[in-house]
Every structure is written in C-alpha cells, then in structure tokens.
Image: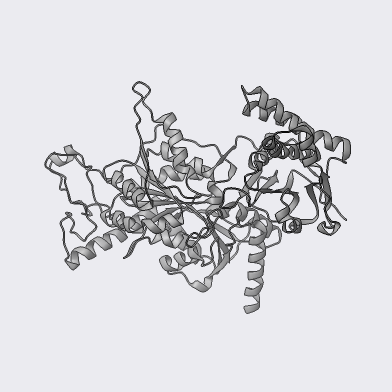
Length: 606
C-alpha cells in the first residue's frame, strides 16, 4: 500500500457526536495549523438538533491558499460509532484512519488500503479524570494532542493558544495543557511518528484574519451606518443581529451619558421584523433584518410594499437548504429567484453576492448605501457556508472620511427655496424620485406613503397612465441600479477561448482551484464572477463573446441561469448547467469533473 504523503497540503475530517464539546477542540487544531503560518479552511457540518446526532468538522490544510473544499479526505478522525462505516469509506486510498482503540473493533470494519492509528482515548481519559464532564471534554483535547504529534505540529503553538484563551484562569490553562500532553506522550511512547501528512512552519497566512461571515456582516452594518435591526431567530442567520448588538454595545453607546444610539428588536415573527425595518427606513434610519429562506417567504408582502412605496431597507439572507424547513443546517444558493422577484406583481430587487467574510463586511455597508440611493429593498445573499464557518480573508478596511450615500433627500431649505417636490417624479432621468424625511418641514414636503397606485406627486390614482408611468420608472431605476452595484470580476484565460464560466458567492473558492486544475489539464475558460443583480452591461458582453458558458451554482433548478436567460434574453442552449445541491459546500473536484464531462458530451454532439 502506498501511503499518501504531503506537507502542508491535506484534508482532515473529524467525525464526532453533536453536544460532545468537540467543536472547540477541532477549532483548536485548525487555529494551531494557522499559527504555524499555514492557511487552513475549516467547515463545520452539524445537525439541526441540540445534541446526540452526528457532526463533522472538515479542515483543509493548504499552503497554496485554496480555501474551497477540495473533495476527498486524507485523514479521518473517527470518533462516532454511528457513522463509522460511512466515515471510513470516505478516506482516500493510502490515507489514514485515527480512532479510539479502547474497545476492540472487528477487523472487517477496517480498510486494507488505509493506515490505521489507534489511541485508547477513553482509557487514558478515564484513568486521569473522574468527573464525567471532564472526561467528555478532555478526551477531545487528548486526541488533538495525539494528532499534533503525528502531524508534527509544534507543541509551543498550543501553549500560546491556551495562554491567550485562559488568561487569568491558570487552573483551566494547566488542565488543558495536561490533556494535550497526555495525547502527545502516548504517541511518543507507542506509535511511529510523524505520519506521511505533516505540518511545517510557513509564512503563507500573512496579514489575513480568521473570522466568519455572520460576524463580518454585523460589523459591516455597524460601519455602514445601520442604527436599527429587527429580526426573528432562524438558523443560520441568528448570529448576525446577535453580533450586531455586541458591536453596537462597543461602538454605539455614548461614553458621557451611557445612552444607546441604536435600536435592536427581536420581533414575534418574520413579518413583524421586516415591517419594523421598513418603518425605520421610511423614517430615515438605516435599518436591516437578517433571516434565511423560510423567513424571506414570510416577508414577501411587506417587500412588495417597500418596492412600490420605494422605502429603503436591507435584508441579509444567510441561505440554507430548502424548500420549506428543508435542511436548516446545510448550505445552498437556492433563494435567488425568491429574492429577485419577491412579492406578487411585477417586482425586481437588488441582490449582492459576497464570496467570503471580507466581502460580507464590504457588501453589508454597500447594501445600506444602495438601499438609500435607490430607495428600495436590497438583499445581501450570503449562505451558511460563508456565514457560520471561519475563514481566512483579507483584513477589513474602512475609510473614516467615507460619507454615507443617503441618496436624494430634499431638505427644508430646498423646500423653502421653492423646489418642486413630487415624491415619485423622475426629474433626473434615472428613475429615482426625491424624498423627504418625516418632519422635515411644518407645511411642505409631506406625502402619503401607500402600497397602491399613485401619480408622480403621491396622490392616489387608478389611472392607467399613472400606473404605467410608475412601473416603467421603476424599471428605469433598476437599470440605474446595474451601474451602481459592485461590478463583475473577469479573469481571462492565458489563451483565446470561446468557453466561459459564470459563478458567484460561496462557489468562488472552489471555482478558483477548479480553474487552475482545468487549465493544467489544457481546458481554458474565461471566468466571470458575479457580484450583484441586476446584471451590469459587462455580463451581456461576456455572453456575447463566448459560444458556451458554464453556470456553476448550488441549487437544483439553475436559478442563476434562469435569471441570465430571463433578464438578458440569453440563449438557453449557450448556458450549460453545473449544479450541486446536496447541502454540502461545492468542491473543486466536483466542478472539474462536471465541466470535463459536459465538454465531452458537447464534443460528441458537434
């Protein structure tokens, strides 16, 4: 058997039981690798119940800096008897199986083409600790210690991590170091080490930070000027408003008076939360709500009101598996059509597609600007993979001289100067009317806000020409939005090609690696990463320059492809679907295989 051998380039997966305290131990492992200067990309795959069900933690160690899932597992840490067979089957030939050898396991439960490493974790734990909870928690730390020895991780890294975590709590520091050393000592005394997989000191992390998308979204809302958040708890978005409150407590409390300069309301349901956010936006505040697909379904009527009455509001949609309750703790990109056309009647909404926590921060702030500028709902389309997993990314940057874009707001001075105020009057040709904040002037600038048809001066009207005027003006505003949203990023292949690929959001990290692999195999693709909807003119130009364009997305019904066909009148035969929707993040191997297979089929039909 030929063992897999790699330095700073492997995938390790931990199979645990939810509620066992394994998450913090697995994260400790990932942080230790990162502290050695080696990029690591972890993903937590957890069930939608409290405890007792299987959970997995996959960490990709990659000095090249690929942050997407590669596909395949080089080492499995099998700590859950319930999932043993499936976990063992997932290991690459020549890989490694690490398990608790306290109790004997039948020989037919192992594979002959993997290296088996047994450490009697339960025995070591029970010998050392008497408290049941300590036994449960420290067993996890012991296996991290054993792995650190097997993979040649520097022991001092753990000492520094624990010293930071338990500063002022020396008793906890000592007990955790003891557990790490129990695992390391067992390997030293009983096993051959290091393995073929090793971690070597590097400098590839640089100034990158390690954070999750939901925290970044919350901080982006703070820096973007949001002062009101209304929400109802739903996985996987709940930590967005929770972190927003944490950051507001730090940055939005007046030091001299202790007065809070923000309002956060946990509403009774999603309908109430979006209603509150829209009310705050109408009143001039920057407001947002955070939810997931199931919450969007409930918010659609209010979204129609905000669209037609033209009220700014930002919605952060951390997408999960659907429809209905679907898979609450799995990831997808399956809310595109629901958000693009939310509400009955003819509606079109702006959507932004961040690829990582850095862009979550930037897009959250940008969405608040766009909502004010366009006077309309704006969606930030994150998902569970970005939102709830920690990722290395560029540091957040904010220019303190940056002004918030409040859009077209008419002041009391403007009204007194005799400016004509028609709330829905398109005087500038961009489809956007001027608005006033409530209370701007004692006698001028007031208007009725209603979800019914009206004329350019906000007067109730059911006249066909008035209705058509507003509906066409809204379309004009949508075209204006295409010039204001973040523009696509295009990467041209090293040689001319008539093949292209379009992708977006959390698909990006795996797509980057897939493009490199395909190029090495002689398959050249020009690539366009979408950052927003509506589609800027460069997207239509990209389609015109290519005969075949693969559209890679994580849903069943090719929703982004549908938008491209519908909005740009693209030829459906030109756009080839590459779809992944099992709830796990897409992998580079899946993309490479799918594109290679489809290319072969296309050649057969020519």
